[in-house]
Image (tube, rainbow, N blue to C red; front, side, top):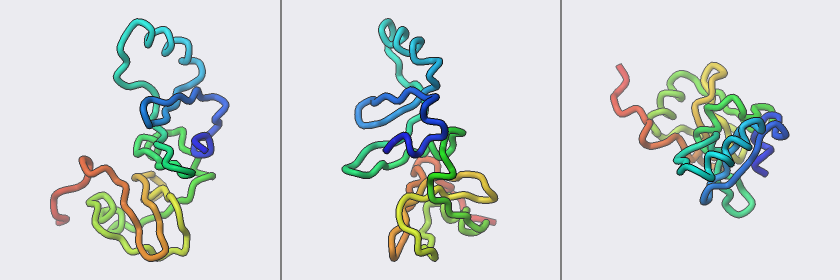
Length: 136
């Protein structure tokens, strides 16, 4: 399930830290194992997400990484005003019939994740990154 979100999953080493799944390039696997044996590693790789039942809750790091498989995930292109609202974590109406996790994009650039539901959208943009000021 985790590998479906990643481009060329065979070239990555996937590992779990607590509840999070992460990935690093295969060529760094031995170096990571060696370093972990001798040092405390606070962070390594790209955080893919957390498994919750039969669903993966994708992480914001994955949305912004080059390893996200844009062909395999649903994408929702936002207008400028919708993108600003998304980045402010304001409510955006769900005008599509699509359901599930969607990579929110503006002019082809990934912004983050949202969960599309039949009557609304849950914004998963990180609270600590949201835009706090009012638009001009």
